[in-house]
Image 1: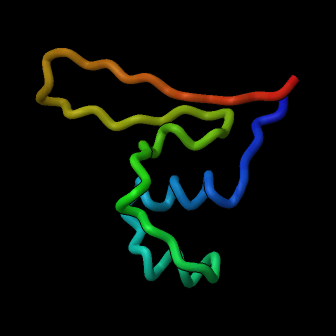
Image 2: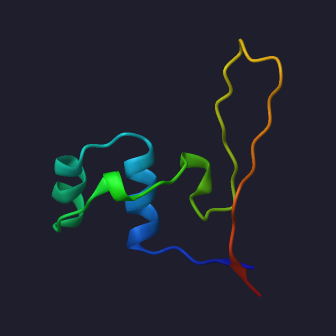
Length: 70
């Protein structure tokens, strides 16, 4: 299986972990708008899964999105 990743996937990830647009622009050398990207860190199209739960919550669940090519 191949997990297809592109620059936009990494930009979405950086936005989702609160990198500033200025910091991301320094990395990819183009303007980016994080406010228009509604993504979760766990949705990076990569063969690993990670999430953070609020330990005070009584009911916990999450889901992950992956796209693969066979």
